[in-house]
Length: 442
Image (cartoon, rainbow, N blue to C red; front, side):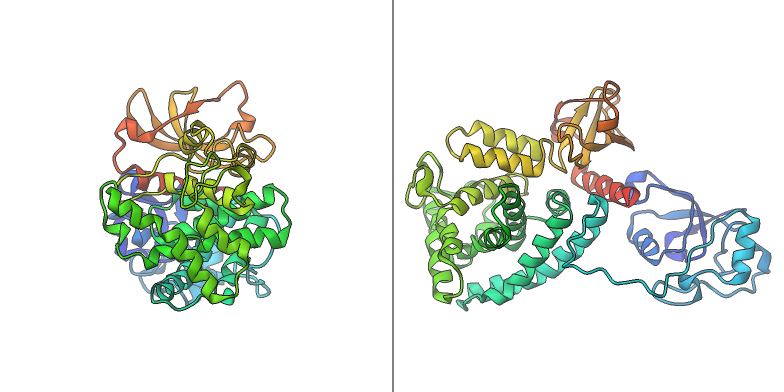
């Protein structure tokens, strides 16, 4: 028997038959399942779903009882504890077997907690979960570090080394997950989020260039701290909604020397790391600032940082403009002839993929699709989830397509810009499609 209840009344042990409204309102790929996971319950309650249809013949009723219990059974507990969250009872298991429902497995008693310093390879979907936790940890640390820097207190290497170690290990486990997550996240415009993203890009690029582990970590540290001088400016750039005036631009450009001088004051960081503060806005053709260096007058880390910095800036929201698609950003950077070291730019594109995670592509089926994973053997045929039908101009239920297995059936026509189709609330759709893909592909 089906019964409609409010999402606030959903409990563990219920059998979800249907979620009201469009799939865009919730983060779940399946809409029929036995609810035994406390995290899924929390995600459901946090979604925009208003009502749920439950099947009381396959799971608990709103009173906490199964339909065969005459209303006398105990209410399923809230997430975080209780018998239901530890596994079904013997009676529950027998009932589920009669109804051909798979009972939840009790958690093994010998589960080993995840080690964030592990370097064992993981799929993108699995690593994204660890990457989200890492972003939360690192953001707390960096917000404090950048605030103390703004107040003039020197940054110690020991404060930020744990972040670099976590990033290095994450990219060892999967070279695309962390950077893909940073492209998808809607909230990625803060100074420390930019530093975190550039640091991860520098580490991935350094690995691609086979620099060696210690130099790769130094490159990551340089990317993390290269904009520390922004906190010493007499203006708050984040409040400027239009392009900078000439006076404002001249002030902002001093963040390069301010950052270098500030990190030098601390005395713990190498000259190569500190130089990146000065050099990440230099350009290979001499058109950059503050010293108009040319070619290899710019240090290796500086040439790497120039590419990583511009890529993350293009693909992140800014007060005066929205982000652009990752693949479109690579196209723009290719078009800026002479500004970047071409050899390093080639290596960078190899490190993020021809179609980076978070890119939107148009398929031969007439649909738009989001790139959700890479195929290491062929970066031209990533894994995608289609989400929009161009002919009918409507958002559709996503379809999972591994393009490496669809040769001659479904191909990428070109990169595309979702903003040209007037898709309402596309940032939320992009994030929801990516999160749903990660849950399914785990």
